[in-house]
Amino acid sequence: MEINPEEALDEKTQFLANTIYDLRQDLDLHRVIALNHTSMKEMNFSGAFFGRVQQLALFSIAINFPKLFEIERGFELCSIPAILSKLPDSQIGDEQVQYFKEFEEKTGFDLIHKHGKIGVQSALEQFKSKNDVSLIQLKTYRDKAGAHLEYPAPSGKIPSHQKLEEMWTFANCFYQLVHKVYNNVNPALMGAQTSIGLKKTLERLGLKDVELFF
Image 1 (cartoon, rainbow, N blue to C red):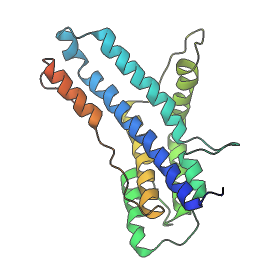
Image 2 (cartoon, rainbow, N blue to C red):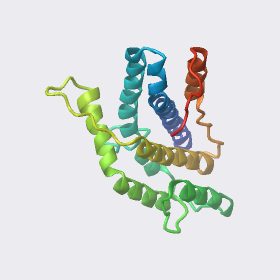
Image 3 (cartoon, rainbow, N blue to C red):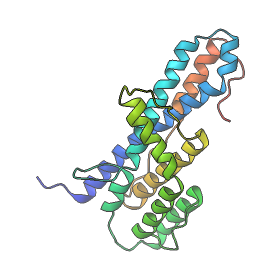
């Protein structure tokens, strides 16, 4: 059965959103544990347990981030480049221009005054050029530390949390733009349920003044 292109785009965008949401939770989990590490240690919280939780979050981050920017090679993907390639070249209406301006403001990448598929392609190329090293670090960590039991063990260097946040913001802004303009649907909110839940859990365990942000 032939799949409607519009329905396929909407479904792929939903899969992309799921990965972006998962990354939001993993980034928050990793950050909150790191911020409160000293206080947790002083209260004799299990370093082995919370360290393991943080490590699992890091594995998930390393696995999922490269997925977002993977290029199709022989099979269909729900990545940003794959979805971008499927966007129509149709003219953008005046009422939709605001969404492209919001994308520019939030990501910091210039659409070169072209609102539509061509402008977003330009922004993606700028993003990849700026974050090429970070994407390679994540892919290397995923392939060597996350996917294989390699010897000798790799160093496992990954981008800073600030850099990961910048990359996440670009991905989320892309998702929001596609959903609003091309799917004509309000995007899902990427809430901080995990960080809020962890904060409440730590407070119940007796930790005061739980930090959530750097």
